[in-house]
Image 1 (tube, chains in turn green, brown):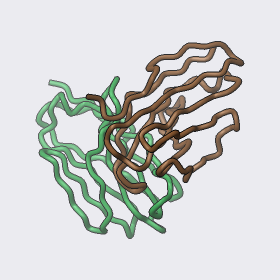
Image 2 (tube, rainbow over the protein chains, first blue to last red; image 1 turned 90 degrees about the vertical axis):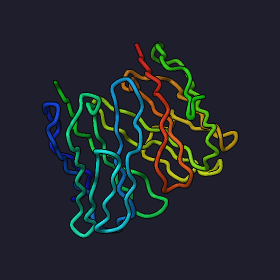
Image 3 (cartoon, each protein chain N blue to C red; image 1 turned 45 degrees about the vertical axis):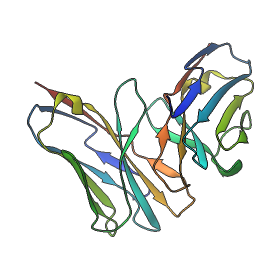
Image 4 (cartoon, each protein chain N blue to C red; image 1 turned 180 degrees about the vertical axis):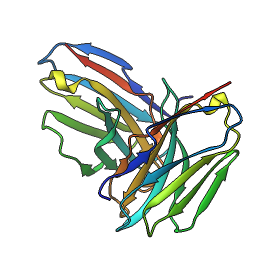
Length: 112
Length: 112
């Protein structure tokens, strides 16, 4: 994998559903994997920065896992709420001073 | 009290003009960035400065020139604007060059 890829591109779930998305990134020279939440008409906000293989982070109903050997990360949302509706971006950094490369995001819409 | 602020938020101008977008952060961060959100909604790195020194310079036309008078400010000057420069430009900062990014609200540039 040469670029950061996210799937699915968009997702539509009902309130209360649990959901997850995937981020695939280059595994060679891996340094860090970031997840951001981007609400419409606002700026992206960091959710997690993960560096260690097998790392798992949690913030409320949102959690993320990281596999640096195979180059993927999962973001999970438990019991989705309408306020979770946003685009979720992941970004990969290789090396300490290299650029952060973003994926195109997964657009989540949660309806009542 | 905005952490990363950009001005102007909206800018409409004619082809061939020169314009600047200003960015200031009050977080005490060492590293600042300019990202461009392209037509496919990708966030692409343009420049990164660490303590006023340029550390990342992506393949960006010479018409784009960043200037960092101090580590709290990173301005973007664009000469001879072209139609293809129309985009949303995001400023961001981080505590270290490998840390999570804090984004401004974006500046929407429209070139007519």
